[in-house]
Image (cartoon, rainbow over all chains, first blue to last red; front, side):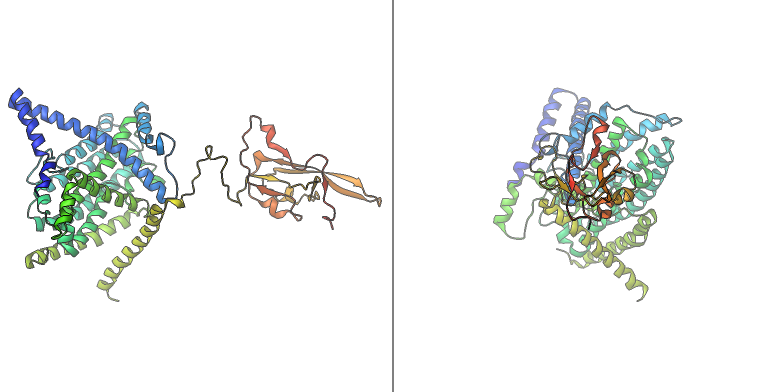
Amino acid sequence: MKILSIYDFSNLTQAIHTWLSGKMSVVSTQVVEMILVGTVFLLFFAVLGLVLVYAERKVCAIIQVRLGPMRVGKWGTAQTLADFIKLVFKEPLITRDADKFLFNLAPFIIIIASFMAVAVMPFAKGLQAMDFDIGLFYISAVSSIGVTSILVAGWASNSKYSLIGAIRSGAQILSYELSAGLSLLTIVILTGSLQLSEIVESQADGWWIWKGHVSSIIAFVIFIIAGTAETNRGPFDMAEAESELTAGFHTEYSGIKFAFFFLAEYVNMFIIAAIGATVFFGGWMPLHVGNFEAFNNIMDYIPSVVWFFMKVSAIIFLMMWFRWTFPRLRIDQLLTLEWKYLLPLSLMNILLMAFLSLMGWHF
Amino acid sequence: MNEVTEYFSDIFKGVRSLLKGMSVTGYYFLHPKEIITQQYPENRDVLKVPERFRGELVMPHTADNQHRCTGCSACQLACPNGSIIIVSDRVETPEGKKKKVIDKHVYNLAMCTFCNLCVRACPTDAIVMSNDFEHATYDRGELIKILNQPGSKVLEGIEE
């Protein structure tokens, strides 16, 4: 645990805070800090979007025995940047008789929802913009704001494809929110806290996926299924089923507004993976195996940020693997899966976990 | 089987079939050597075109300029687009009989859909699909090709 302290970011953030407080009043310190954090997240989102889109295209290509983007830059690394520049220069079209105000508002709602969710993410020890007592609850609350944007976008577009896509997406996200929440609650039984930093700290001697054994694994599987559904990604991409709805709720969007929706999809994927990594795989906690002191010490030398991003990318890869393997579900199959299988299973699982925790049968 | 066991066995069967699918895609992800994409203009010298690829219709000729086409028009009849026209001629054989021989095998590449029906219809295997696929030209007229080379003759003994 001693070694961990060199990678503790709270010293850095504290130093910035003290320096700013010495220069200006309390209120302006707050404002400047907010602007700083916002800028950092804005840059982070941009980089995240570029990297994840590239990664998705490469993973998809290799799974489909293709090469993927290869022309722009070495191994096509600059491809997403080129696509982004193209999107920025495109004309933002609006359909006739569309509700202009809502049409323009929708992309911002979805981006703001992702911004709010990422604010409580513990990237490393002390590297967390906000540390609410009810962090996990807050995340599941704000991440469901995104569906409002999809509904608004579908309604305001004045297009039947958009509307059908939006309605489907509404039904889907409302349903899957339940099992996502319940599977997270399963772990909360063990942690006894909703605060994300505390959830991470509670895994110092082992990750919950290991400590909660059977029940944790079921919870993780349910969480990853529900999480994939919540981000509207394949095999649950009913909202934009290309073959039936052209592009679903963002059919009528173009240019930078389309880019916002596109970016939000990938940021939401990151958020789901980050929650999964934090709750089930110990967030930024290094891998510790029992009493192997030497091994544990070596693991401690890897910075916590690296651990966090390693776990997140592993889960993101899993989600990409799903997307490019499974065929899309029909809307009734989608709702059957949630209401007849995932929800009863997660309710049973939460009971099982309560029992395990009551008997002390977890590690 | 009662309903409860059916419910759970459904879940296990579902999970098993999903894992099976993931193992297939996982195999391809871990074996990038399986990738079949070719970086075309760069690898022009080492380009590997599959043997059965249908690039264009050709009529192979022997070294002494002989082909196997008797001018029977079977390919012309088989072609669904009418992209083959056989222009035949009548010549007098040494025995004094009139005999049908091919004058021009006109093949319009622009209209061809590479369905291979002409190759299958040919009774003497005179025409085959080649692998050559770089057909871009500046003039549409260049796409109308005469397959038998000038001065070529039909191979002896094909017609019997």
